[in-house]
Image 1 (tube, rainbow, N blue to C red):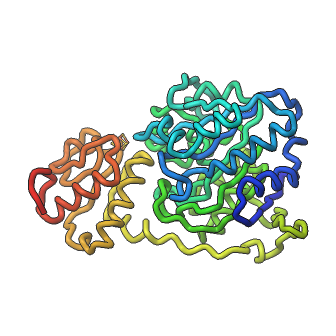
Image 2 (cartoon, helix red, strand yellow):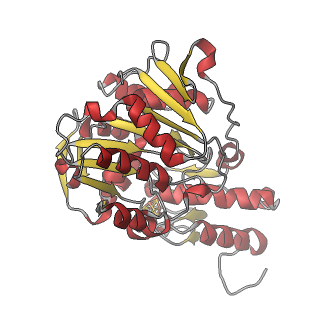
Image 3 (spheres, rainbow, N blue to C red):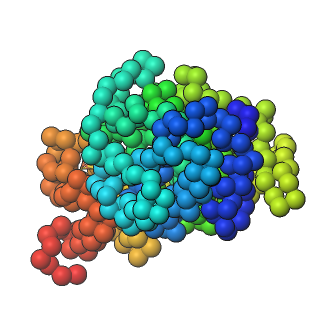
Length: 382
Ligand code: SF4
């Protein structure tokens, strides 16, 4: 497979589709030493079934493992760390990865329990999980999704799962885009298999899956994310980390010279011009509908990612119009005062939904009490 290629396959037999794509891309031809340690990095952001639209379908990872084992690769590991606030162990269980591990004899590595080391990632020092050092060939298996802070999340941002939790929080304090771009130089992705089966186009933790039944493969994470931007109706300038990563030499945003192919029963055909947008995806509007109510400063993904769906639930119940003030969230509010905040970082506020992070349901219930009763106190009934 060439560096400027993206290959897509539509269908519902996800394991078979994955194996066909890997054969067509000649993945094995890219792995020079079949005894090397091959890492598979899914997206298991939180313990939620893949049908929810947030996590990588285990059938895709099963397809990758079967393909590699059929070609004599035995030194495999599945490495992942869920977001701050959820335990990877639980995600492995709920998402079906313990079962995969037993079935194929591939160990699971919980990055949240790993040690870490400092690496200079092209001018920015980042803390990375130690497992990164032992992986010789990395296969990234992100979910194509929307994200309430960065608009999209796919190949580049998925590498955040191989950071210790302290560094994940620190990323938000650094503004997310710059460190995500530098991370692309700190952890090299050798191959990407995109789960575009039913990702949620608004929220990283799912809940509103949009079924497309597509899997894509590529060698260039920047090219993949550029294509995803277009599919989700964003201009590339709206997701700054993509061009930053290109400037650092992590890949190319040149869609014009990319070869985007569709693997079909009768063979592969290539898409040209505007035909590269061969699928219709709805506009993500749930975040826009509620984000004006929030003042966010350096919030962690989980905290913000739980707040917005909670607000969306309140919006659907017609309660948000009664909310008289903005909701503050994020590490930037530590030690500060204000009226209404979400997360322990706003514990100095008059009203604070406690937790680090509080869950979507905790936020929803607390804000509902606040709107209806003017208090966060739990004893009262509404
Ligand atoms: S309370 Fe603060 S540190 Fe904890 S998850 Fe929320 S933003 Fe991050």
